[in-house]
Amino acid sequence: MTDFEKKANNAPGQEVVARLMDRRGFLKTLAAAGAGAAIGSNALLRETLAQKAPPSRGNFKPTDLHFSIEEQYRPVSLLAENCVELRDGFDTLASATNYQTLSPAPEGDAGSATFGSGKLQVSGDSYFALFKSDTGQRAPFTTIILDVERFAGSGGEHDAVYAGLVKDADNYVVAWYDDAKKQAGFDVVVDGAVNSLGTVEVDLPAPARFAFVLNENLVISLSDTGDGFEHLLRRNVEELVDLREPATLSEYKNGFGARASSGTIVLDGVEAGYYGEVGVRDENIVTYSDGTPFIEDGKLYFTQTNAGVVGDGVYAGGAGVRAAHFGVYTLDLSDYAKLEEVGKIFFQRDGKLLGDHAGHVTYDEDTESFHVYASTWGDFRFEPDSGVQVSHVQVGGTNLLEGVHVLEADLLPIPTQTEVYDPHVARIRGDWWIGYVETRQSPFGRHYPVLAKASGPDFNDLTIVGKDPSVNSLPGRVYEGTKLQKVGGEWYVFVSGFGDYRIYDLGMNFVGNLDAPYLEGTIPHPMVVPIPEDGRTRWIMITFDGETYDGLGTTTRSNFYVMEAAEITRGYEFPPRPLP
Image (tube, rainbow, N blue to C red; front, side, top):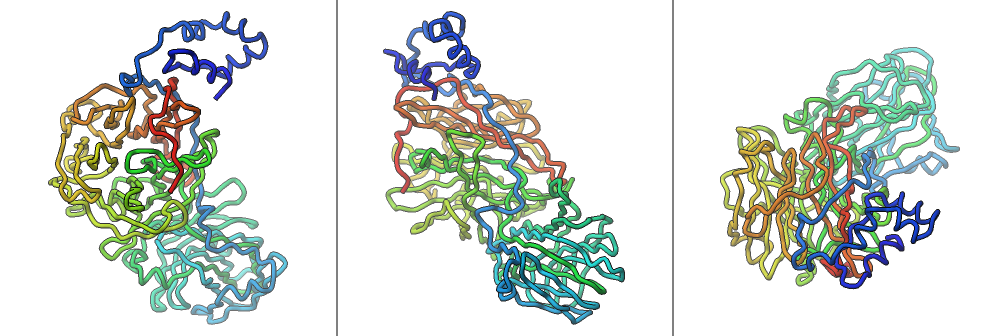
């Protein structure tokens, strides 16, 4: 906050002060001409300082907020930096002890491997070596990146590198690039039987990076020759090996390999761990049960849906939502460009490891436990009996906001004959309230907000307070992204729908529209956040747009946005409090 803003907010009787729309321009004028001259030359500032005291906090409503975009960018990270399981630069001979060397058929010869001086050199005649590490992931969301210094270049049938998940010499799921054939492809080997899942023509000159990505049961290969990763090929391995099964996945470890008819292939590094994101959506702040945002050291904790790497045309079939998962992030409130993923939450449901997402994490101080609500998109398909619902799990004794967690959740007993998703929860005046979306996938586009309440966070005695199916007659038709938020001491329900943000009171009576830029191409969720600072409340909104990411062939929603309101309210909507 600038010195001018602090002074303006301390004006006697002033409870809300509109900020200058062009703060940078004003500060330059202030520095050049002095405060008196700047005020005299700025009509907006004169009007702001001369205005009468605005309505009291009790009369301040969400329709009084006016948002503008402060920051926008697309988070892209194939490998989540804080969730790396393997990082090896082959610097010492000790690197060899990190791997089990396997000799798959038909060669049955792993050649000779030399580790050290930043290189792994594999040499021989007619060799095929797979190096299985002792690291793996607890959910089927994996990235393995192999740095290739040079290929053998000696001719012959094979001159290839491999990256993927390895169980043993007879069972592995790998992406490969063969420089002799100028092709990339996938092999899924089950009990020694090789299943080749197609190829693509590509020239990958070394030095280069070659990557294997697993999103649920989708495998994706990518390459980078210096200008960033590009999508090569995508396949589904579910009919051959279901990596969502906990017992199966636990046997497969991060691995890589080399294969040549003769000569030496040189690798100079490998990284592996949990997949990151190629875009984000469904932002929800982490809160205490009373709605207080989790903020520590100037950083806001929130969750997002991490978009998977998928090809064109797969989103409508459900693969795009199954390829995504739940990420936990922090946003630096002094620099909106600083976004960091600090944790991941996966789910085990019906015997499968899934990337359910689009949910809300709350903390109940009475029971000293987290409550996690999620939409069951992790196994969603546009098929009968594959509808999305809302799940819930209570977790105590651990910090869910850092590291990787796999939770077993139960479906909430929501009394509906439709599908439901986008839960958002708060404890208001002793009752637990939940906003969510009811939907019918057929005919597609019947999505509308619902508000309910219960006596406990498991919502066993849930009562529907109200819903608004009338929005299906509006031009937007599809309304989702339910959020509960307190503004001016009163609670409201926010939703969004292809053109506008709608606001309801706790009786589900329409109040008005939120004044914020509407982002094209999707349904940007209106996650309005009150930020306490210096005895006042600053208002931001975090959301997303619908831009695709052509570089990796994905059709998913993508860019992250931070908006900020022109208004600052005096006093705290939620007083600052330390994290538990």
